[in-house]
Image (cartoon, rainbow, N blue to C red; front, side, top):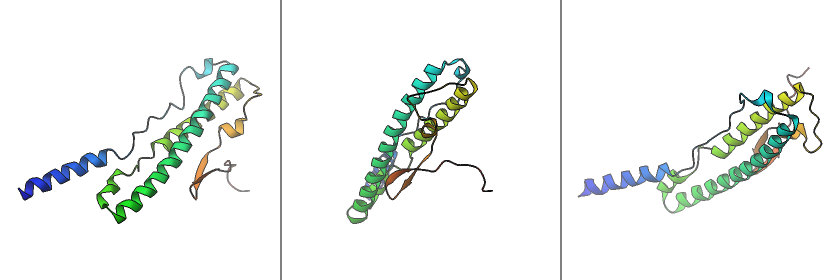
Length: 146
């Protein structure tokens, strides 16, 4: 009987650990049809991608906050709860994929000499970093120092 209870507890913990976050589904950075996109289509996709990036970064911030809460509660009340933490970082991976997609679209737009009025291209391709629980825009990489 004791072995059965132990086995049930182990199986339960394995099921609980499977709930620890969702699997990332990043977008393709480069698509075969990119060269055929018009400037207007590129601009619309950049705007849509930026909205997705903002949403995903907010989701990542909430996930970090939830992980802190779960970690504190698990240390105080029920240590196996640590297995429910979301350590996969799906939202951040997806946001980075959208940023990579934007970089590719900006390259295509530059090749076509597109001009945009409603979107800042530097903003669309800037990476984000998490500092002290707040998202701050990382400075764009300018290459090695001179």
